[in-house]
Image (cartoon, rainbow, N blue to C red; front, side, top):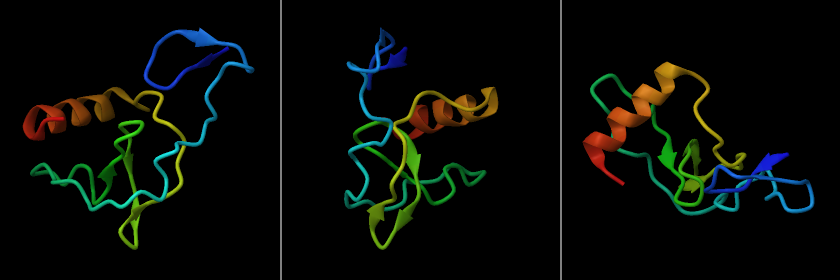
Length: 86
């Protein structure tokens, strides 16, 4: 079972979105940083809401965001969104 982009419901392989985000290659510039440097030069993908590396002014290929890897990362994301908004 898989998550669908933007939702918490589970879907079968046939109904699942591909793991690669369609936002790859979109024009982007690094997001503003918190005092501790988060998100470290990455940009916010407007498709999956992941912080993604930027190369030559575009989002690099990445999997759709499926949640934070750690509680600390979740805390950093929350602080960033509370500071800079959506």
